Image (cartoon, rainbow over all chains, first blue to last red; front, side, top):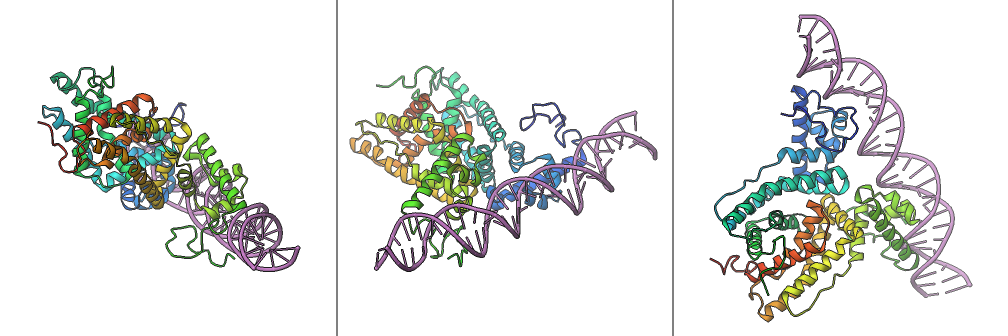
Amino acid sequence: MGRDRAGQLGERMSEEEPTPGSVRPGGRTARTRAAVLTATLDELGEGGYGELTMEKIAQRSGVHLATVYRRWGTVERIICELMIDKSADIALPDTGSLRADLLGLASGIGGFYAAPRNRRVMEAVVAAAVRQPYAAEMLRDFFRDRRREAAVLVRRAIERGEVAADTDTDVVIAALGAPFYYRLLVSRGPIDWHLAETTAAAAYEAARAGVFRRAAADADEG
Amino acid sequence: MGRDRAGQLGERMSEEEPTPGSVRPGGRTARTRAAVLTATLDELGEGGYGELTMEKIAQRSGVHLATVYRRWGTVERIICELMIDKSADIALPDTGSLRADLLGLASGIGGFYAAPRNRRVMEAVVAAAVRQPYAAEMLRDFFRDRRREAAVLVRRAIERGEVAADTDTDVVIAALGAPFYYRLLVSRGPIDWHLAETTAAAAYEAARAGVFRRAAADADEG
DNA sequence: AATCTAATGCGAGCACGTTCGCGTTAGATT
DNA sequence: AATCTAACGCGAACGTGCTCGCATTAGATT
């Protein structure tokens, strides 16, 4: 694992100076990394992104401030690495019906963000993405990949004939996820079971109605 | 004056010392305010939230840095005020059918965020909300109010008998809005006509199917 | 086990954001 | 029009975030 971390995070175009920690990923370096990421997660759990500073991370982790700056440079980079690291794989169900699969995925997402700590990490990543371009790229790519993984649910439904063959799988998954992030970032309410249930049902009904077909958005009505 | 500035810039709970600009809102004060908000909007349009600083705002607006600090204290407060100020009323259609009304509202939202400048303001507000509690409150309340205004579309549909009487109007509007903010903040792609069309159709089909009813989320199927 | 050097610890120094006190301006009041 | 004072302009000073050079440590290599 981790034998070549070059190009792992931000934009490293010029082939100079490997990121500290990328050449000797063993023993001490790994401990430092773990200590910093753990400390960051704890700090985020307590105060959130607004009160997160490099100094607090350094103090809590026991790693020297200059070391933290050398390896990550900004709190945003640490947050990005933390998210990829936590990358809590939300289980992809396979029940045999799209409706149940979507509900399972929705409850997985809901369960994940019901934990305040995970919610804080997500908030921090989004805020970081607004401020730093590389964080925005990371966020975009990360979620694109996750949607691609989840798209298999819809492909199976297509094979079963539950939804139209030209259904845009990515859009279905995006439609399933969107309400959670709206609740998380905009309306800022609790993420509960009702949200998961409603969201899954809405995505299902829309998909069944052919709303997400690639060819025509509104094919079967009127 | 200036005998006791305690608590001026922070959270203002205690009934002391009015915010600068609130006592004499006329002439010069109004010009200063307008200059700062305009400058902030321009700065956001160019560099985004990440490169927004009090000093840039002061320089571009021609207002002295100390004055900007005294009246707003943080860029986040300026951003909040800017958003409330811009409060670009997205028109609420009244076509006689829920489907067309939802499509009209969606295209209104889509058209608004298709402008990079408006998109940047929204991004900044969300980022600000993650960092500062009062910005989070403002954001939550602001969007709650806007959803309430838009809920009339759904109420009319209920009266016409298009959807169930116990349909949760707020949830319908939230479902209509969510995909835009997901696109805006997470998947970070362009906000185009197709998104508006798909989103409106999805919300409509789900509402028709009874997904958003208050009593039971999944009433009419199976 | 001896050697090499990436990674870390340490503290000084720099830069920038932020605050403060005081004098001035201009809108409001009489 | 004379007076009052909130709001503003100005520059100095403060604090914090961030960087840099050097010594030390410890993982990797032979």
